[in-house]
Image (cartoon, rainbow, N blue to C red; front, side, top):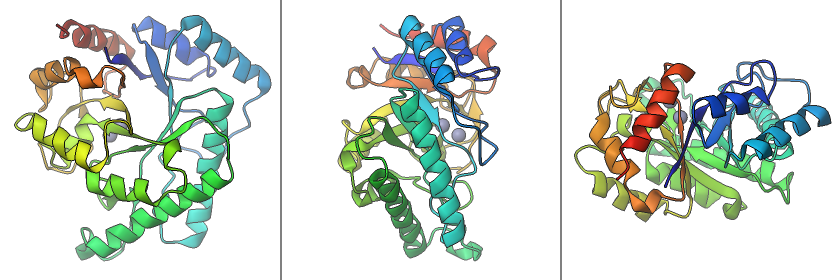
Length: 287
Ligand SMILES: [Zn+2]
Ligand SMILES: [Zn+2]
Protein backbone atom coordinates (compact mmCIF):
# COMPACT_ATOMS: atom_id res chain seq x y z
CA UNK A 1 0.00 0.00 0.00
CA UNK A 2 1.16 3.53 -0.72
CA UNK A 3 2.55 5.08 2.49
CA UNK A 4 0.81 8.31 3.47
CA UNK A 5 1.93 11.49 5.23
CA UNK A 6 2.03 15.25 4.83
CA UNK A 7 4.32 18.27 4.87
CA UNK A 8 5.11 18.67 8.57
CA UNK A 9 6.37 21.76 10.39
CA UNK A 10 9.91 22.09 11.79
CA UNK A 11 8.94 25.07 13.99
CA UNK A 12 10.86 24.83 17.26
CA UNK A 13 13.28 22.21 15.91
CA UNK A 14 13.60 19.68 13.11
CA UNK A 15 12.60 16.79 15.40
CA UNK A 16 9.21 18.43 16.07
CA UNK A 17 8.13 17.43 12.58
CA UNK A 18 8.30 13.77 13.64
CA UNK A 19 5.80 14.35 16.46
CA UNK A 20 3.47 16.18 14.07
CA UNK A 21 3.75 13.33 11.55
CA UNK A 22 2.74 10.82 14.23
CA UNK A 23 -0.10 13.02 15.51
CA UNK A 24 -1.79 12.95 12.10
CA UNK A 25 -1.30 9.22 11.59
CA UNK A 26 1.49 9.71 9.02
CA UNK A 27 3.84 6.92 7.93
CA UNK A 28 6.31 9.31 6.26
CA UNK A 29 6.83 13.07 6.09
CA UNK A 30 8.00 15.96 3.99
CA UNK A 31 9.77 18.90 5.69
CA UNK A 32 11.73 22.03 4.90
CA UNK A 33 15.28 21.71 6.24
CA UNK A 34 15.57 25.48 6.85
CA UNK A 35 13.39 28.58 6.55
CA UNK A 36 12.22 28.19 2.95
CA UNK A 37 11.93 31.93 2.36
CA UNK A 38 15.54 32.78 3.22
CA UNK A 39 18.70 32.09 1.24
CA UNK A 40 20.98 31.11 4.10
CA UNK A 41 20.66 29.35 7.43
CA UNK A 42 22.93 28.26 10.25
CA UNK A 43 24.45 24.80 9.78
CA UNK A 44 22.59 21.91 11.43
CA UNK A 45 24.61 20.91 14.50
CA UNK A 46 25.52 17.28 15.18
CA UNK A 47 23.19 17.37 18.21
CA UNK A 48 20.24 18.67 16.16
CA UNK A 49 20.84 16.03 13.50
CA UNK A 50 20.99 13.25 16.11
CA UNK A 51 17.82 14.46 17.83
CA UNK A 52 16.10 14.29 14.44
CA UNK A 53 17.45 10.96 13.22
CA UNK A 54 16.80 9.32 16.64
CA UNK A 55 13.20 10.57 16.57
CA UNK A 56 12.72 9.28 13.00
CA UNK A 57 14.15 5.88 13.91
CA UNK A 58 12.02 5.60 17.06
CA UNK A 59 8.86 6.56 15.17
CA UNK A 60 9.76 4.21 12.27
CA UNK A 61 8.61 6.73 9.65
CA UNK A 62 9.89 7.10 6.13
CA UNK A 63 10.94 7.42 3.40
CA UNK A 64 11.14 11.10 4.26
CA UNK A 65 11.46 14.02 1.87
CA UNK A 66 12.91 17.52 2.04
CA UNK A 67 11.24 20.18 -0.13
CA UNK A 68 13.75 22.77 -1.31
CA UNK A 69 13.39 26.55 -0.89
CA UNK A 70 10.95 28.39 -3.15
CA UNK A 71 13.73 30.93 -3.90
CA UNK A 72 15.90 28.49 -5.86
CA UNK A 73 15.60 28.68 -9.66
CA UNK A 74 18.03 26.29 -11.36
CA UNK A 75 16.63 27.34 -14.76
CA UNK A 76 17.79 30.95 -14.75
CA UNK A 77 19.93 32.21 -17.66
CA UNK A 78 21.66 34.77 -15.39
CA UNK A 79 25.09 33.40 -14.42
CA UNK A 80 25.17 35.21 -11.06
CA UNK A 81 21.70 34.04 -10.09
CA UNK A 82 22.51 30.53 -11.24
CA UNK A 83 25.57 30.44 -8.96
CA UNK A 84 23.41 31.54 -6.00
CA UNK A 85 20.77 28.96 -6.82
CA UNK A 86 23.39 26.18 -7.13
CA UNK A 87 25.00 27.20 -3.83
CA UNK A 88 21.67 27.20 -2.00
CA UNK A 89 20.66 23.89 -3.57
CA UNK A 90 24.01 22.29 -2.66
CA UNK A 91 23.50 23.45 0.94
CA UNK A 92 20.02 21.86 1.02
CA UNK A 93 21.44 18.65 -0.41
CA UNK A 94 24.14 18.48 2.28
CA UNK A 95 21.53 19.12 4.99
CA UNK A 96 19.27 16.41 3.58
CA UNK A 97 22.11 13.89 3.49
CA UNK A 98 23.16 14.84 7.03
CA UNK A 99 19.59 14.14 8.22
CA UNK A 100 19.37 10.75 6.49
CA UNK A 101 16.61 12.03 4.21
CA UNK A 102 15.73 9.77 1.24
CA UNK A 103 14.56 12.44 -1.24
CA UNK A 104 15.36 16.10 -1.89
CA UNK A 105 12.33 17.31 -3.87
CA UNK A 106 12.71 20.44 -5.99
CA UNK A 107 10.70 22.56 -8.40
CA UNK A 108 12.47 22.39 -11.78
CA UNK A 109 12.58 26.17 -12.28
CA UNK A 110 11.49 28.92 -14.65
CA UNK A 111 12.95 30.36 -17.83
CA UNK A 112 11.94 33.93 -16.79
CA UNK A 113 12.22 35.25 -20.35
CA UNK A 114 11.17 38.91 -20.41
CA UNK A 115 9.28 38.54 -23.72
CA UNK A 116 5.87 37.19 -22.64
CA UNK A 117 5.18 35.87 -26.16
CA UNK A 118 8.02 33.38 -25.68
CA UNK A 119 6.39 31.75 -22.63
CA UNK A 120 5.85 28.50 -24.53
CA UNK A 121 8.62 28.82 -27.10
CA UNK A 122 10.20 25.38 -27.49
CA UNK A 123 13.79 26.63 -27.78
CA UNK A 124 13.48 28.97 -24.79
CA UNK A 125 11.99 26.19 -22.66
CA UNK A 126 14.53 23.55 -23.76
CA UNK A 127 17.43 25.90 -23.00
CA UNK A 128 16.12 26.33 -19.44
CA UNK A 129 15.66 22.55 -19.03
CA UNK A 130 19.24 22.03 -20.19
CA UNK A 131 20.54 24.64 -17.73
CA UNK A 132 18.68 22.82 -14.92
CA UNK A 133 20.31 19.52 -15.91
CA UNK A 134 23.76 21.14 -16.08
CA UNK A 135 23.33 22.75 -12.64
CA UNK A 136 22.19 19.42 -11.17
CA UNK A 137 25.22 17.69 -12.67
CA UNK A 138 27.55 20.27 -11.09
CA UNK A 139 25.91 19.65 -7.71
CA UNK A 140 26.17 15.87 -8.18
CA UNK A 141 29.86 16.16 -9.05
CA UNK A 142 30.46 17.89 -5.71
CA UNK A 143 28.52 15.27 -3.74
CA UNK A 144 29.83 11.92 -4.97
CA UNK A 145 28.56 9.04 -2.84
CA UNK A 146 25.49 10.83 -1.47
CA UNK A 147 22.56 8.46 -0.98
CA UNK A 148 19.76 11.04 -0.97
CA UNK A 149 18.03 11.21 -4.36
CA UNK A 150 17.38 14.47 -6.20
CA UNK A 151 13.70 14.40 -7.07
CA UNK A 152 12.06 16.49 -9.78
CA UNK A 153 8.53 17.67 -8.97
CA UNK A 154 6.42 18.31 -12.07
CA UNK A 155 5.27 21.95 -12.28
CA UNK A 156 1.73 23.31 -12.66
CA UNK A 157 2.80 25.48 -15.59
CA UNK A 158 2.33 28.85 -13.89
CA UNK A 159 4.21 31.81 -15.32
CA UNK A 160 7.35 30.64 -17.06
CA UNK A 161 7.64 27.38 -15.09
CA UNK A 162 9.34 24.56 -16.96
CA UNK A 163 9.11 20.84 -16.18
CA UNK A 164 5.31 20.84 -16.64
CA UNK A 165 4.98 17.85 -18.95
CA UNK A 166 6.48 14.36 -18.66
CA UNK A 167 8.49 15.20 -21.80
CA UNK A 168 10.06 18.20 -20.09
CA UNK A 169 10.79 16.19 -16.94
CA UNK A 170 12.41 13.57 -19.13
CA UNK A 171 14.63 16.15 -20.83
CA UNK A 172 16.09 17.09 -17.43
CA UNK A 173 16.58 13.41 -16.51
CA UNK A 174 18.31 12.71 -19.82
CA UNK A 175 20.70 15.64 -19.27
CA UNK A 176 22.01 14.91 -15.76
CA UNK A 177 25.34 13.20 -15.08
CA UNK A 178 24.17 10.63 -12.52
CA UNK A 179 20.75 9.40 -13.63
CA UNK A 180 20.65 6.78 -10.86
CA UNK A 181 20.59 9.49 -8.19
CA UNK A 182 17.43 11.05 -9.71
CA UNK A 183 13.76 10.51 -8.95
CA UNK A 184 10.41 12.08 -9.80
CA UNK A 185 7.48 13.27 -7.67
CA UNK A 186 4.07 13.57 -9.32
CA UNK A 187 2.09 16.41 -7.80
CA UNK A 188 -1.50 15.41 -8.59
CA UNK A 189 -2.69 19.05 -8.63
CA UNK A 190 0.17 20.29 -10.83
CA UNK A 191 -0.21 17.51 -13.38
CA UNK A 192 -3.98 18.10 -13.61
CA UNK A 193 -3.48 21.89 -13.84
CA UNK A 194 -1.05 21.53 -16.69
CA UNK A 195 -3.46 19.34 -18.67
CA UNK A 196 -3.20 15.67 -17.62
CA UNK A 197 -6.79 14.49 -17.35
CA UNK A 198 -6.66 12.08 -14.40
CA UNK A 199 -10.46 12.10 -14.19
CA UNK A 200 -11.35 11.44 -17.82
CA UNK A 201 -8.33 9.51 -19.06
CA UNK A 202 -6.52 7.92 -16.06
CA UNK A 203 -4.91 5.06 -17.99
CA UNK A 204 -3.77 7.32 -20.84
CA UNK A 205 -1.98 9.60 -18.37
CA UNK A 206 -0.09 6.58 -17.01
CA UNK A 207 0.73 5.32 -20.49
CA UNK A 208 2.39 8.63 -21.35
CA UNK A 209 4.18 8.76 -17.99
CA UNK A 210 5.55 5.24 -18.42
CA UNK A 211 6.64 6.05 -21.95
CA UNK A 212 8.47 9.26 -21.02
CA UNK A 213 9.68 8.78 -17.43
CA UNK A 214 9.07 5.20 -16.25
CA UNK A 215 7.68 3.70 -13.05
CA UNK A 216 11.12 2.99 -11.53
CA UNK A 217 12.00 6.69 -11.54
CA UNK A 218 8.75 7.64 -9.82
CA UNK A 219 9.33 7.76 -6.05
CA UNK A 220 6.52 9.85 -4.59
CA UNK A 221 3.32 11.83 -4.91
CA UNK A 222 2.25 15.17 -3.61
CA UNK A 223 -1.39 14.31 -2.95
CA UNK A 224 -3.41 17.45 -3.55
CA UNK A 225 -6.89 18.07 -4.84
CA UNK A 226 -7.23 21.07 -7.17
CA UNK A 227 -9.03 24.40 -7.01
CA UNK A 228 -8.02 24.88 -10.67
CA UNK A 229 -9.56 23.21 -13.73
CA UNK A 230 -7.62 20.72 -15.86
CA UNK A 231 -5.24 22.66 -18.11
CA UNK A 232 -5.69 25.99 -16.32
CA UNK A 233 -1.97 26.17 -15.43
CA UNK A 234 -2.55 27.51 -11.94
CA UNK A 235 -0.92 26.11 -8.78
CA UNK A 236 -3.86 25.98 -6.32
CA UNK A 237 -4.13 23.00 -3.99
CA UNK A 238 -7.40 21.92 -2.41
CA UNK A 239 -8.44 19.56 0.39
CA UNK A 240 -8.70 15.90 -0.69
CA UNK A 241 -12.14 15.15 -2.09
CA UNK A 242 -13.40 18.73 -2.24
CA UNK A 243 -11.69 19.94 -5.44
CA UNK A 244 -11.92 19.39 -9.20
CA UNK A 245 -9.99 16.10 -9.05
CA UNK A 246 -12.50 14.70 -6.57
CA UNK A 247 -12.85 11.62 -4.43
CA UNK A 248 -13.23 9.05 -7.23
CA UNK A 249 -9.79 9.95 -8.62
CA UNK A 250 -8.23 9.44 -5.20
CA UNK A 251 -10.10 6.14 -4.80
CA UNK A 252 -8.62 4.96 -8.09
CA UNK A 253 -5.13 6.12 -7.07
CA UNK A 254 -5.27 4.45 -3.63
CA UNK A 255 -6.28 1.16 -5.25
CA UNK A 256 -3.73 1.26 -8.08
CA UNK A 257 -1.47 -1.72 -7.29
CA UNK A 258 1.48 -0.41 -9.32
CA UNK A 259 1.80 2.42 -6.78
CA UNK A 260 2.06 0.22 -3.68
CA UNK A 261 5.79 0.90 -3.20
CA UNK A 262 5.44 4.69 -3.55
CA UNK A 263 4.84 7.30 -0.85
CA UNK A 264 2.31 10.17 -0.88
CA UNK A 265 2.64 13.45 1.04
CA UNK A 266 -0.31 15.83 1.46
CA UNK A 267 0.31 19.52 0.75
CA UNK A 268 -3.33 20.49 1.20
CA UNK A 269 -4.21 23.88 2.68
CA UNK A 270 -5.92 23.20 6.02
CA UNK A 271 -3.03 21.90 8.14
CA UNK A 272 -2.67 19.09 10.70
CA UNK A 273 -6.27 19.12 11.96
CA UNK A 274 -7.48 18.41 8.44
CA UNK A 275 -4.58 16.12 7.47
CA UNK A 276 -5.49 13.58 10.14
CA UNK A 277 -8.95 13.34 8.52
CA UNK A 278 -7.62 13.37 4.95
CA UNK A 279 -5.16 10.55 5.68
CA UNK A 280 -7.94 8.53 7.35
CA UNK A 281 -10.18 9.25 4.35
CA UNK A 282 -7.52 8.07 1.87
CA UNK A 283 -6.95 4.88 3.88
CA UNK A 284 -10.71 4.23 3.96
CA UNK A 285 -10.80 4.29 0.15
CA UNK A 286 -8.60 1.20 -0.05
CA UNK A 287 -10.36 -2.04 -0.83
ZN1 LIG B 1 3.90 19.81 -4.60
ZN1 LIG C 1 1.81 23.31 -5.79
